[in-house]
Amino acid sequence: MALFLASHWENGWAVMEVRGVLDTTTAEELRDFVAAVTAKHKHLLNLIADLSELTYTDADALSPLATAHTMLERDGGELRLVCPEGRVERVLQASGLARVLPVYPSLDAALAAGRPTGGEGKRDPAR
Picture 1 (cartoon, rainbow, N blue to C red):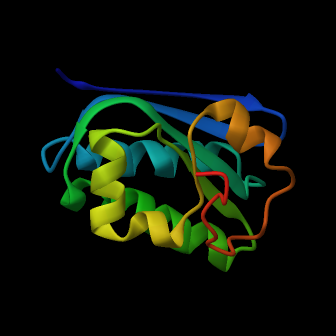
Picture 2 (tube, helix red, strand yellow):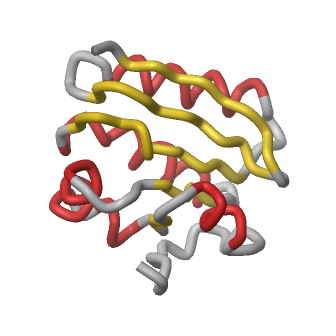
């Protein structure tokens, strides 16, 4: 299965939908997509990456999200991840990314968490 990427605007957040397989062969697609979304919305400082329909990832392929986090945090923004429990969440945990970025079980939970924290890197205590 290929990687499917889409974005939309919701409650002041750019939401990126990441579906399918994210591995070393598709990570560059994600990197380019993140760059395109942030370039399109130059005022954008807050991004949610919805990984809830990601069927597979490996730790190496998550680097575009780590890069986006660094860039957004530097500019006073925030990146939140949506990832229900399962294999992808275990990869986020093993990679250490879940200790740096807030991870929510659903898009509704990520949006309901309130105003952006400015990239404080705290995991949602409800998880």
